[in-house]
Image (cartoon, rainbow, N blue to C red; front, top):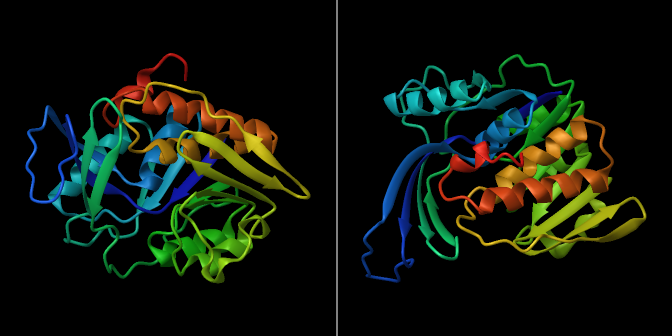
Length: 270
């Protein structure tokens, strides 16, 4: 199984707190973690742990903070193609606050910034997962993908050029097309996730919902990324669309039961 994930990598500063503070409030963290993150990177690590051969196409650069990202990828056997290898700018940073007891989180991030990038040479003949960050990379990956899976978290202008190539679109409940068009029309297979609510899906002329198991959530950060990585692997295995959704739901449910960005990857149920 060959998976190529294209999009955002970040350095995440994760605080766990008893309660997410309101305006002008301070909170004492019970733990602090600095880790690699970002939707494409987290999906790539998930896919690698599930047994795929994974390449991540992203923008990290030569800043010392980028070494943390590269070491994390090396540890999980993810191959890196860095489209910003010569940049001395720091990689995107995210401040993540996770509420203990509920797993709810808040995220403040700079995301991709305004780097000038070009797509490095890459074999895109397998399953390609695109998150819409770094538009130049997203366009090139979508145009060359063997099978294109789109992580549609929120509308980005580049999706107007990416979605016509999509085979599968996995969207969040917060994703809306400009003008309010029907999401089910954007690809042959479409799924919409909504936290613990059932996953809605459309496939050809059929549609329905897939249940999400009830679990005790310890940390919901990155649950969607785990979903997308597992979905890409299941599609690469030539699993039917509904079976692929069920596998992605199963993996995301495991992820939310563990605190922190990486502890869940040792769960024997994977």
